Length: 139
Image 1: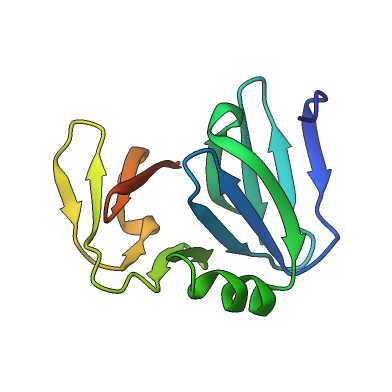
Image 2: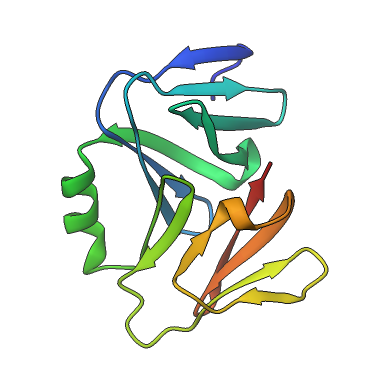
């Protein structure tokens, strides 16, 4: 993992694909001049001046930049794809798996596959798709 702290420009492609240690993935569509802010334990993706998400280094196995169309085409047949664009978290390719978002107290927030993160109060949430789950933060 990268050990420097601060901001880094992301210039490689139009999407950032996060591969988590639990085998789930998040695909973030990037606008012009996105930034990744590195902290001691987390990193935050910023695009068009808004926070697209924060993740703990310990939860991410690796990430890569690639064309969004390629990322979705390759992963859709294998597992659900989670994308974040314009403040909306979208889960696609779930088949018959249930989708739900819970707050950290375990209360159900929504069972929708599209979540407007601007409507959520700041905090940590758990996205559950079938038997898999990932944490995400809203600031």
